[in-house]
Length: 515
Image (cartoon, rainbow, N blue to C red; front, side):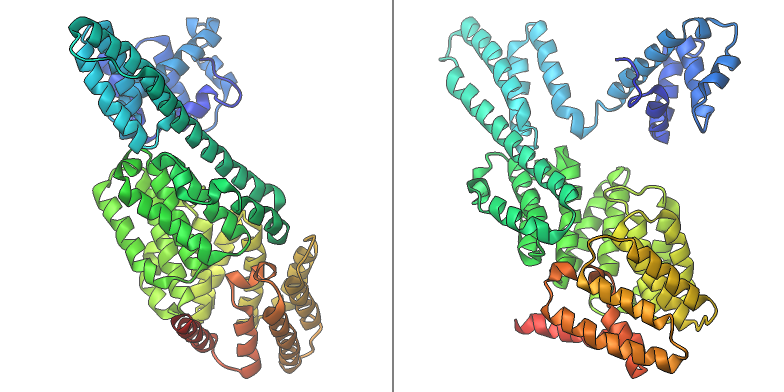
């Protein structure tokens, strides 16, 4: 394989973990390759923080490395991949592929019964462990080996190849179909943008026969795709309780098929991540202790796994969200130090599962409500440097404005209000909630005194409350991330925000208990 723009040599080396680099160097020493050109190039690239090909050529000027530059690069690229193949031989995610390779070797050696036993085990693992697309390959080997065993021993009739092939192909195609639908759902969410534009399409999809029952899915992995797609479809149209039940179905699926977790660990990480978010959206706070225990159990069993980082972040998001959702802002302060340390150590790891910006946002929320404005502002400044999600960016700007107001920054406040107003005004297709917030900011910028500002808050609190009582949930996106109504009410009534949020949380919890 030759390096391309998208799969370059430096990119490959740059993605190596310390453990992988250590293994490659050990392999080099054991194989006696230390003086070879590709190893010299490897060591030089490892030392570069940013790839600079001209510097490398200058370093090796006059050597055969430069004369055979493309050849040495290509050889090193493939050399690293070969060593990584050996490194990952014991990795559970690669076990099935290694098994099939070993079946081929045993067959070549004429050890047909050994090959057949390994193939039988691999077939079971492929079905249960999420690799149904390997079943047609396994079926092909079954024909070869079963026929050879029958021919040599003639003790039993050979396998019904036609029936077995049909089953293997059917299960594989079924999984690919559910995978395809799942990918289409995710692509649709990024393409459309606004929730209301999705409602008609999502309801149509949910009513299709393929989503009528999980029994339509013919393998554990297909069932997983079934649940994940339904979670996304329901979340997009604010059907949070339905999303919660399907997310819970994913977790139960992993308990029913433990090999799915073992051989496709990212499905388990995704399931936990989805279940946390669905639990938060549906306010099913009783599930949080179970989730934390589930995560801790996995971490204790897989302490050296790279997945521990993902799960730790998922756990912290669950803990902070549960505290905020239940009005337990003071209790959340007990573990803010540990979370702050985690964020500092992993702030560059922004991806699908490690989300330091969300943790920082929750910390801002908690410190703000507890009246610790300097700490909240410090985290906002940190957040501004790594924030990428638009809705959190807008909310962060508004929270910064609120903090400045609370700190009585009379000089900075008018400027900050105008800055936030300009930023939000650039946003197209605003919902009415956002328009009311914009008008509040615009009017408050002209307030001559705190009393005038209080009257402004009172006026817009009434407008906002009327909208909240009548508007679809999808139009109240900003309100999901911070209770602006509670903050406005605290200014009108001159009461601590923490006190009001505790009251509102208690009302919500009591409401769920009686509903």
